Length: 125
Image (tube, rainbow, N blue to C red; front, side, top):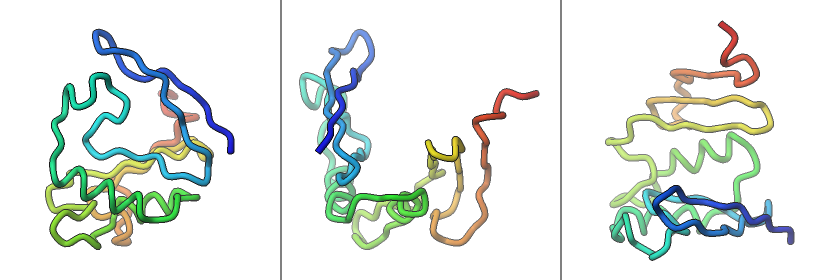
């Protein structure tokens, strides 16, 4: 499989080289830096973070923006669902379409996007 290393972090935090998994893998995070050194420096482990990360890690890697919206809408873990009532908004950056999709409801609810931005024309005023 093909991996790419990318620098992550911001001063004064330590920089790290992150291995970005192949397209067959899931790369996600839930309120926890995965590559910050020392580990846990900013964000102590929380049950919600661990449960939501484990749930998404158990699913096949998303292939489309619709797959990503499905992951963001997941409520299978009743105690710590990915999409929670406290979720203010969900955003999906689509690198192929160069668009950002934003919705205040569960993305798979069928609700229309609250906002949708075409990044090719975002700064055209």
